[in-house]
Image 1 (cartoon, rainbow, N blue to C red):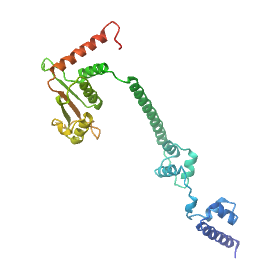
Image 2 (image 1 turned 120 degrees about the horizontal axis):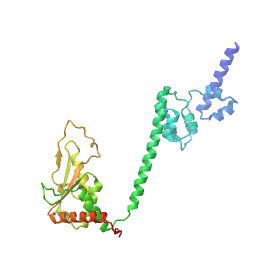
Image 3 (image 1 turned 60 degrees about the vertical axis):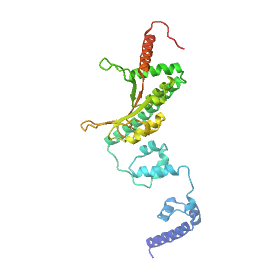
Length: 290
């Protein structure tokens, strides 16, 4: 028997023993000690292709991260991208995915674009966080609102967005239409402050015919706190195929019109409040801060 053949036979015999021990459920350390193998590369070759016993797969808090890292690696992501996505160290990523094929190496130009995109995504996230914080801080500055403050806010809101008498149409009536739910709820709260009964309101949805009309009707009815069946017949806007509409999708709900019956006197009061606001704002004297 040649030395080469004897060496091969010895290795195969050792492998059979290692595989048998593995199938009995022994760990790598136990097999190494049992067979007196000090070289990990040899142990790896002996156990190549042999499933790991279930009991050695101890639960780990990073198991989910490991699986996600492997998924991203199989999608062709680099260590840098995986680290950005998962927030874990490159050393951990390398350990988790080292048995997977390496993604095709990108050209330098593409790598530069990817790096720039990663930096820009990070910058956008930071800007958005700062933007949201500014909004929340400003909202907190408002605090509770007095009846007088709501009276003035409502008057300004109506004079900016509500229907007004014109020389060619001198009709005095209170009619308000808007697509912003906050504007509608504030306007209705203002009418409640003024003592306008709900049965004097006529609510009507205005929306494009291609939108989800019934869903919009339900949304506005729920917002104002009325039964959708009490809404006036919805006004459907014809779609012009020559224009590209941007107000589409599930978030598009059209506008809600709020009209007050027998409101000529109320209209005149609103106009008077607005004139008072303008006069107070432009007066050279000290403003009333109470």
